[in-house]
Amino acid sequence: MIDSLPKDKKIVLFDGVCNLCNSFIDQIVKRDKNNVFLFASLQSDIGIAIREHLKLDTSKLDSVILFEPDTTYYKKSTAALHIMKEFGGAWKLMKGFLIMPKFIRDAVYDLIGKYRYKLFGKKETCRMPTPEERTKFLG
Image 1 (cartoon, rainbow, N blue to C red):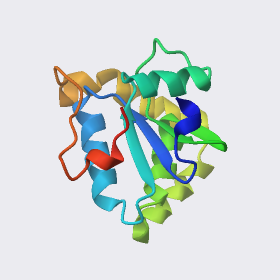
Image 2: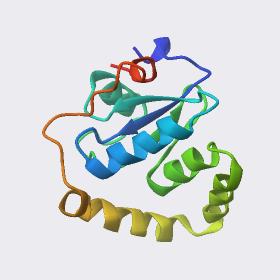
Image 3: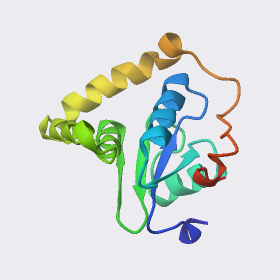
Image 4: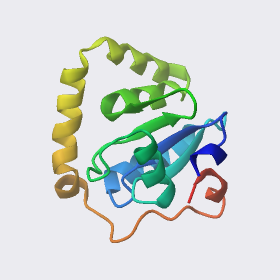
């Protein structure tokens, strides 16, 4: 399953039932002018396969993961910042936050993650792509 993923795309894994996460995915889809990203929920078969391939704890569904096949992966704040720098324009300045110590960035990320369902709500089912978006979503 992992071997069949396109090598020229970056894959964003996200919590498919989290409203905040889904809003972030909506923003990525809107700003992905160069068609860089593909998406899969952490709960999907491909999401689970990627996490197992990366040897990430499959019981934790609290982090966005940016997977670049045959290259590397990023999670939490590092993933979010690498995603935003692909938006171009002033968004590239977000890359500057990578100089901040990871433990500080991830502490803020984890704090938001801990309360995301209370603050932003939760869906009963994973996000379904629109017909126009369907080619960008895996599994």
